[in-house]
Length: 185
Image (cartoon, rainbow, N blue to C red; front, top):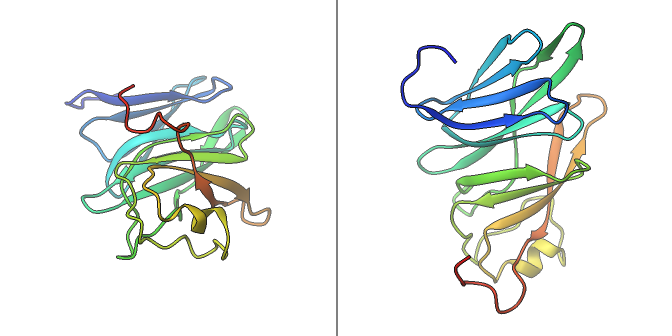
């Protein structure tokens, strides 16, 4: 990990076991290590990293980073090439924008086992007057949920076959069963 003070914020393994992601608690740096050679790939983000998740197929890793006022998700494409893995330059994945034009801070994220969906935990509930993302249509699940406070959102993930970039499409809120909301876990 190098000579860094402050400890480790999180560690995440790729499902194939060929890579491990490490984030130091005092850094805005996502370090990816190939486990065959322990080669390090370091990537800076805008803001403090709070979570990361490898896609089930091992082609991407997403990192959730927050500044003082907003959150963002960074995607790093991974390309397996013997004997090592190449990590491409990261790009931002648009998830949600509030009326002020920022995205709320993100606490956690996780891919579904198939890689078709992404669950994102926002650090604070979104206010009821926030608009759905630009690609949400009238009558969509996003519009139906706007009047309720929620903090866990579900997105579909789509891959552009020409650029290999992923895109997240808002599908709705994940809510606890009736009568469970607000109770301590």
